[in-house]
Image 1 (tube, rainbow, N blue to C red):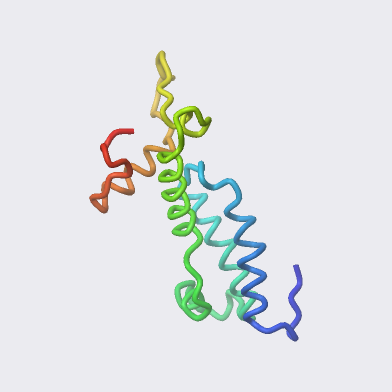
Image 2 (cartoon, rainbow, N blue to C red):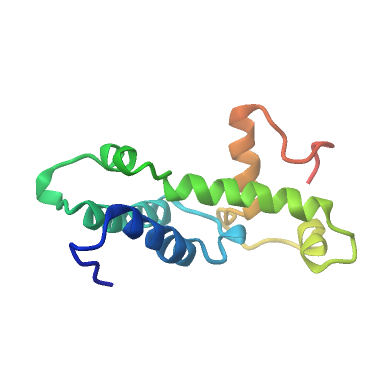
Length: 141
């Protein structure tokens, strides 16, 4: 995508919010973000914002400074907030809805040998332990 110099920053930011952010967040309600994926999301967002301001990496301006100048929140934080909203939405659903059934599903049998894969509900649970909030009022998953 090419943005000419004649376009002002507000227009470029609106384009960022309506296209790039939406594309980066597509389907993120069920993602399990690993550290590497978080870094890649932040890098993609910063690449766009740097271009928006006309800065390069050679200018050695910190990512926090660029984000503060434009007033944009970190993409990973937005995705995590979006996931918490989705969790609350699923908890309010009727029990016959598929997302609610998938959330309450407990598989039978044994898992494979080795370290268990990080699950979506584990990720939300660990984040809420740090703040002292439980995602579910009853405290169960």
